[in-house]
Length: 489
Image 1: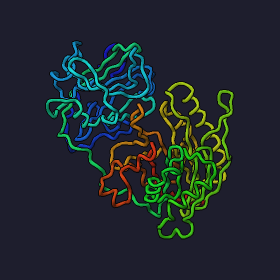
Image 2: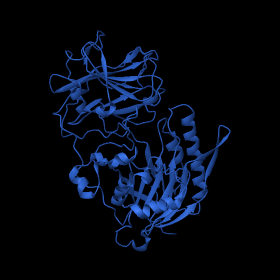
Image 3: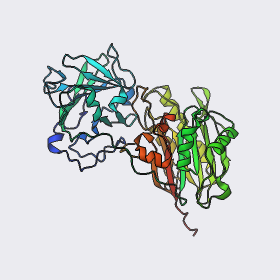
Image 4: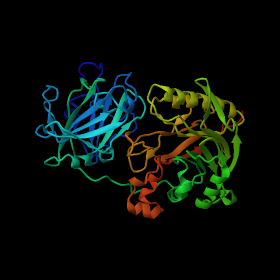
C-alpha cells in the first residue's frame, strides 16, 4: 500500500512476483494505456527485451510528464541490495537502487519540470544522468490518466556496471512534494527476469494494399519536410500505396505544390483497376492537406475560424469528400494545439478547437449521410483525453460517437506515433484516427516504423532504416472495409 499522502497505491501489489510467476510463453502487455490485459495480482512484468510496470496516481495528478508533482521509479536492477544505493528508511532498505526514473523530474530546488529523466545511481548516492534513448523508456498514455503503463528496455542494464547479468529485479514507486521531499511510496516489488535477448526486429512485411479496402494514411511531416528531403517520404508512401493521404504540418498553402510533389515522387498506383484515376487531387488548408488518387470534392468551409479568449483563431483542419470505387469517404485532416499540460491555455485551446471542428462537421456532413467518415491527424493529447472525445461525439452516421482506430506499431506491442529522443518527453501516441464504425470496418490499423524492421525486410520492400527519422511523427495507416447501407424499406 502507498504510504502517507496518496490515498491509492501507485504500485498495485508488492507480492506480484510470488503470486504471478514469470512465464516466457505468456504474451507481454500491450503498451496502449489500458490495463485490461493485466491480471489483478500483477503490477510488473518482464520479457527478454523489456520490463513493464503499471501504476496508479491520484485523480488530480495531471499528465504524468507535465505534472505539479514528481513520480519516480526506484529500480533495483539486479535485486541485490549490495549494489546501488541502500536506503536507511525501513520501506527501502531491502533495495539497492541502481536506477531512478523521474516523471516530471525535479529541479535543483525540488520543483518539477516537464518530461522524464533517468539516472544511474552509485552506492554513495551520486547520480549520473542516462540519455532517455538509452533507456528506451515509454509511458502510456501521454494524457492525464488514473492508470499508466511504463516500459523500460532491459539493455539499459549494460550502462549500470552491475557485476553480473541479473536474474531478478526489484523496486518501488515514490512521489515527491514540490520541495523535492518524498511524501509517498509504494510497497517494494520483486520481479524474476528471463534471459535477456536483443530487440527482436520485425521480419514480416506490412499488409499490402488490398483493392477491396480504402487505405487512409495520416502523417505529420514536420514543417513540410518532404520538400527538402523527398526520398524517405517517397519510399514510404510508394510502399503504402494509399488511396488518401492526410497531411499535417504541410505548411505550403498552394495545392499545386503538393500535387506536383506527389506526381513527381509517388508514382501512380499499380493496383489493378486503378487506370487513369491514379493522378493526385489535393485539398489544402492552414498547415494541413488532403491528397487523393480518386475524385475529390472540397467540403466547406475553406478556413475554420473560432473565437477563443476574445480573439479569432484559425483552426488547423481541412475536409474533403473522396469518391472511391468502393464508397464515398468524408475525410478531415486536423492538427490540434500543441504542448501544455492537463490545465492551462493549451489544453483549453485544444478543447475549443475540438468543439469547433465537431460542430462544423455535424453541419457539413449532412449532404452525405451514408458516407464513411475519418478524422485523423495530430491530436497532441498531452493534457487530457477530452479533445478526442469532444471531436468524436455524435459524428457517426447513426449519430453515435466515432470509433478510435487502435493502430499498433508494426513489429512492436505498443501504440506509438511520435518519437524525438532529443526531447525531454518519452515516445508516445499523439496521432489518432477516428472513423465511422456504422459505415466502415477497420481491417488493418498500423503504424510504420522502419527502426522495427530487419535489414532483410527493409531491402525487400525498398525502405531504409532511417526513413522513420524523416519526421518526428510516424505514418498511421487505416484500411477500411465499407459496410453497405441498409436496403431501403
